[in-house]
Length: 386
Image (cartoon, rainbow, N blue to C red; front, side, top):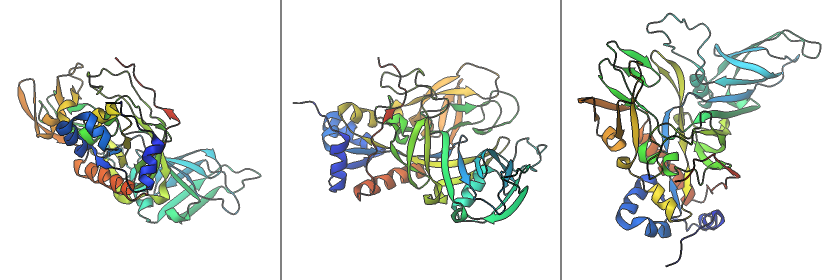
């Protein structure tokens, strides 16, 4: 029996003709378990993945258009949330975790912000009116020193979602060993191992289905915020050399994606502003990456199950620095894990329901011929293979 090999062009041609066989990552897990990776590789062309969770390293580049007379903005606020204006005359970057400038820092617990950049991004995509204020020092060519206006997303000449770090390949499970409740970006953690929070879509998670990044890189077309977007680079904190299991799955946080797409095409259902008690504001982002089944190895990778994916249980109170345990996602999904001899309730911060929905949407787009695979022009930095 010959080796199974497919190319991007062959798969895209099948997509154009409506003949591509597309399954979700959960469906592929069952297929590989039933028929093995070789037969699955012959039958399946594309596996779709999905994740929906708070992704703090997110934001938008906005151009709000030249005013009369023109302004070279040095300080800009959108609904009282500061944006970074050190780019050009009317170009700004709004970060998802930036809170409103007058949101008091002495709330209990500290860092409890009710509104921030992620909420502005959601409101823009929902076509809600946004109050924009800009101040400047004034120059001969940009004499205007102050501008106030109400804008909607459709009024903006340019709005691009550009997220420096999304779709983490695995992440820690957070607990609290201390004697008091703590508030973290992993949610509220009760004292004395009162609960455990995790935030990965497991077998549906994009990079866990391509652990060595064989098919993901610059130019990979993805589902981003309800529209088609792209991987444009490896994300910040990308760590391909994290320790791995023999199946390639990292045992702790590893790869990340930098992604970009047209904000005007996106859907507020998939870009949702969130407030995390005691931490601050963020943006829940929906991402789905199609994985081409180029050969038997890619079929095996995408056939990964929750039971074969592990992560570290870490103490977020800094009482203990070393991991307390290693658990798999089947255990986490059961709702209870065992740590230090104690049964601990486990709850996800990411939405499995929405991850499934995203994988299903991408599957439908491909089957309808609306979504072809983007051929990566440069793959993500990858780990050394054993």
